[in-house]
Length: 137
Image 1 (cartoon, rainbow, N blue to C red):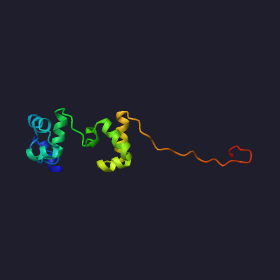
Image 2: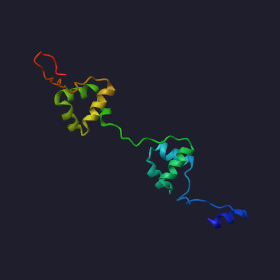
Image 3: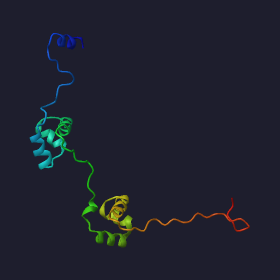
């Protein structure tokens, strides 16, 4: 610390912090690899010989929006009528098992698409009846 302050005092330019692991990615490289080719951040970093953090910083610096890590649902490619037919035949649980997705995913897709689903039927709670026929308070 004292050495850095001394070097600054005598007019030397001192690099603070950890040195970069590789060159900063250029905008052209990011556009080519990340946007046009659709490659992952880790793949871009490996090709450019830098870290994924440096790629993320460069994306932010150049105003390029990073893609989400969320995987697209497999159900997006299935037509509404096919999904309805599968649910009618096997129910939500059976359809989910056959498609390899969670029941919640199917319920969410039904909701997003505006397809009414037969929700769970709940029994009314039994209220103990008194002698007068009214509920016990």
